[in-house]
Amino acid sequence: SLTPFNPGTTVYWTVSNSSIFTLSSAQGNSTTVYRVGTGTGNVTLSARTGSTGGPVFATKTITPCAAPSISGSSSACYGGTSYTLNNAPAGTVSWTSSNPAIIKVSSSSGNTVRLVRTGIGNGSITLSAYINGSPVATLSGIQACVPQIEGPTYIPCNGGGNYTLPYDPNATYNWSISGLMVDYCYKNEALVTAPGYPESGAISCTVIINGQYSYFSKYVDVVDWSPVSAYPNPASGILNIEIDVSAVATSSNAKGLNAAPTYDIRLYDGLGNIVRQQRTKSNTIQFNINSLPNGTYYLHIYDGISNKPEITQIMVQH
Image 1: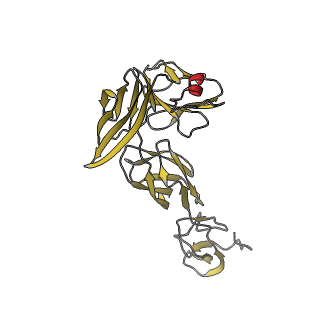
Image 2 (image 1 turned 135 degrees about the horizontal axis):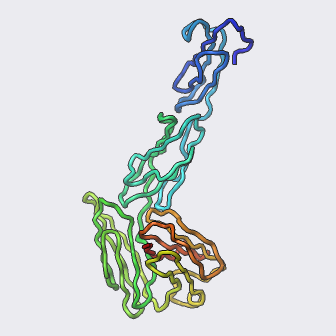
Image 3 (image 1 turned 30 degrees about the vertical axis):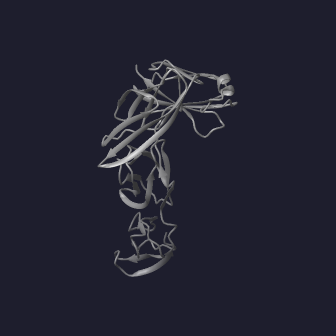
């Protein structure tokens, strides 16, 4: 605001560097100065008479706050990773990824955005933030996390297990099994059947994208017990989950869960979003999945001891 103010004078406002500051109004007794862009250095705010090019009769030096910047992890994964725009000027924030085929913007709220790793291709992206459509900050070199074969680390004798890699429409998937049998494989999914005796084997998949090869492998043990039972599968209304704590605690073959006072049980969709979650001391729980769309989901059970969950693929089919 101009102080003191002569009511007979029309005041016009200017700033010496409009790439750093902009004004809410160029005319009147007061104006609001907004930080824009990423520039640095002091800026002069001037009050003028006659026009915005008229004589200057008052000035004020303004120092810009810190330039806008994006903070967050150097890698983005399938479960989603959050990023924040700091020191943002006033206005509507929007976000873009330089390569959504590798990492895409899944959701945003104000100064926060969530990135999700997509497909199976390699590379990194640049995340850009905009205010009212104008770029204000970027974060380069966000790496796509390394895909892994998802599926159980054990299969009960004469049982089976489903294994998947993230789906990429541009990829060719070639599955191979050592010591086990493949019942069925299609693109990024493979169904494996175990023999009727304890065994160890490797599930492998070679992925080809644009002539480049990537190799993935997961070791699997065939055991004579199963600590986790999820049924029915395919499921429709209620998914029942049971953990055999006695088998978990006593089996020398256990490669999955350990007996623990609290289990963290999560159900993920195919994009890595948590759609159901419960922490419980009980070894039996139920998830209501009536509202979930048909598709493939992944049940992760953390035992509070190991950082690696026991994973079971669940089909929802209404």
